[in-house]
Length: 315
Image (cartoon, rainbow, N blue to C red; front, top):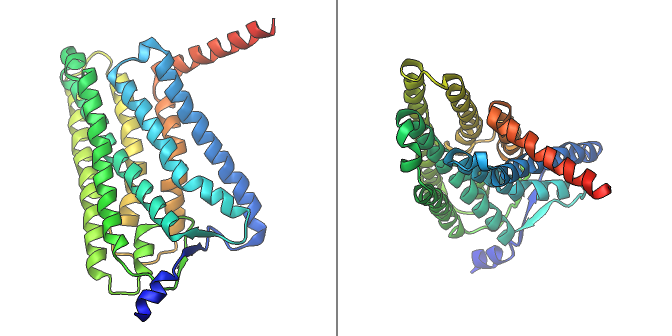
């Protein structure tokens, strides 16, 4: 009875945040506001460019636009709350709010994992079956794979939350972070969590590490094929694959470090969490745009249309 009463009083968690120094709160707010706005500008530009340019109405760019939407969503799970907390001394989140944040964080993050596999499949087909590419990667197939990626992310997240929601929380409630991170939240439970820890690590390991090795193997095969068989468009194919491999590394490196081990506090945890949750969604559109001539040209055409419309409206 006493534990039940204590559990019922557990209404919120308190974030330590990125820094406890009052002097750093406003500078950090400004830095991460710029990062968040840049994330929106970059990813929205990719989405609008793909939608508006008929030259980009092929599976690769359809998938790229969907990844841009996922990057926006992933950043928005943590960044707005973090920005708000920079401006207040009381960095709290309700118990239900914490569960919601963890659910959407792993839902979208898991979807990104499966989505990167879909993009690797797309590149494999484009390079190994170039003449049949548009037939194999039809609209129906693309939509089906996108739906499968979202379903995979949903199942992954539901498993995480199902393991956490059964735990009793009766204090302490301090999280040394800027968002609700599953391993840290589990450690605050007032019960033995070894089995839950192992189940969560196994779930994340299956999704994260398993997908990472699948992707590494896939891109090694793709790069071998490009080097030995592809004659036309070799530079473009290499550039596209290099961009996707860079994104895969940026996404999976921090993810594996944070989630594929039983929780133990390290000095680098917060910096890696910032990279994974806030910085990578900003970098992805830059990586794809800088390494893709078709995308750069399409963005130029879109900006030209916008500027022409603005000038026309002024006259």
